[in-house]
Image 1 (cartoon, one colour):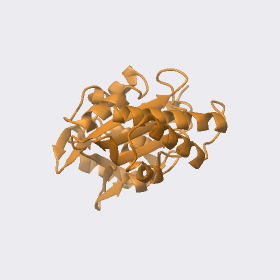
Image 2: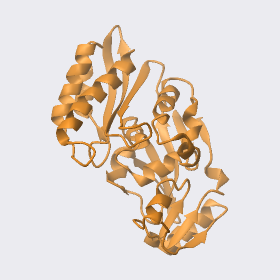
Image 3: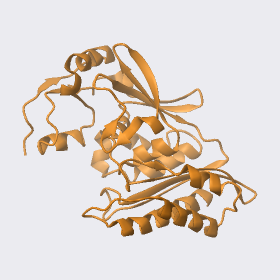
Length: 284
């Protein structure tokens, strides 16, 4: 398998990268980890005329806490999250999620930002960004804008990112000590794409759910925030029966797709199971 011919550029600063994106537009593709893009090029499912390799942009390789957010630079690799990158429930939850991101060698090269830009419906980071109210900072030669995750993902492999824009960082709001997170995923084999997954965060006081964040991924053309079920959970007891009820509600509320890997009915069952398990883990 060989990619179609392309020109290759390796800028050394963000300004040069943005100039190349502005010049080449939709014909240019950003190369960071390349764990999805290169495979698509080898199959000739993607045929960019120009590759813009951003791996020398050291200014985008950072993790820091600022303004109540975890700020994730665009060149932060998946592997950075093998250990909590911030104290508290957010750091623990991200470390829980990363173990399900592809395989260990891929996590050494792939990037958090690249996963969001690729917008695979089965991406763990896309689900995390959606449920945890991430904001994506993007820039072109004319300026910078902040896109909420809820508006960033448009469908399978489709985002609000313009051809001349580069993701600069992702901002995740910190979770205070009262929150706990849970994550559950089902795939045929470890490292395979998820057939269904759920991410939850709960704030429980006196055995009662006071706040909830919940979403499902791998069952539609993008991750889905289950806002109605979040609201219904507030005020309920943090019990197995409450979590099973939420799982059943999610299963009935969604219209999961069918493919060669799973029927719609099978995915409905998985939705119920994944939501129940993620909520139970968040309450443990």
